Image 1 (spheres, rainbow, N blue to C red):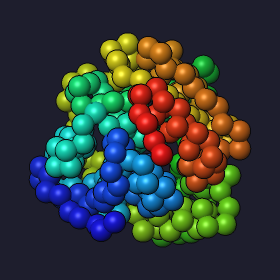
Image 2 (cartoon, rainbow, N blue to C red; image 1 turned 45 degrees about the vertical axis):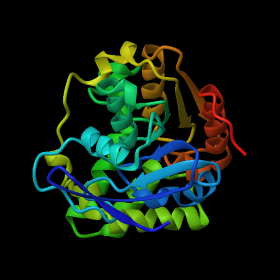
Image 3 (cartoon, rainbow, N blue to C red; image 1 turned 135 degrees about the vertical axis):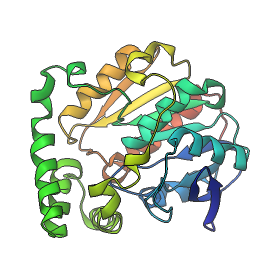
Length: 276
């Protein structure tokens, strides 16, 4: 499992691949990098051809300095590794990219496993209670932003922990803190985000066009707005369902790993894959 670098339009991304068999691609969240999948990457490689990569500006991938398209970065990786119709695992910001890929190039996706996903075109009106539902998000996000601006990285990280990682402890919590600290400029300043572009209309108005098997996981200890967002997506995506995972926060694979493993097994069955 050696880190490699792929040239993409206007930049580079760092990635790893391992294993043989049915393909899985692991994206990451906007408060993490590909290390959030350390356990899963090794385990899944026993039965699958698995790839994970750092999004622009995270981990070992340089920040973007010009316009780029996250979906095109992902497509470049699929082409390079010859991954045909993989199961794309997309948590949070990674979920937005996965969903946009399924809409832009449905023939390139086998299935979607979305974890507390974001989505392009997200709007307060999509959830019950509207803007009020996001009150805790806005309060803690502002506290994190203010602390970062004042040079208090530990306080900024703690505000994010309260919002997104309240169920983590031990090594998982330390990994979260490490990823936030080492990706702080991207997490708090969105260096690459300012250059991010999307082709085509946002996903929010096109959910009925998703034609690949889709499952959504969301934790009951996540940001309170996230289950509402997940339910909005599930109502629009044909055949999609939401599993509310007790005891899980936003980094669901770290807080409740068995629930994630079970979901992968379920999706493998839906896709007709054989493992073991």
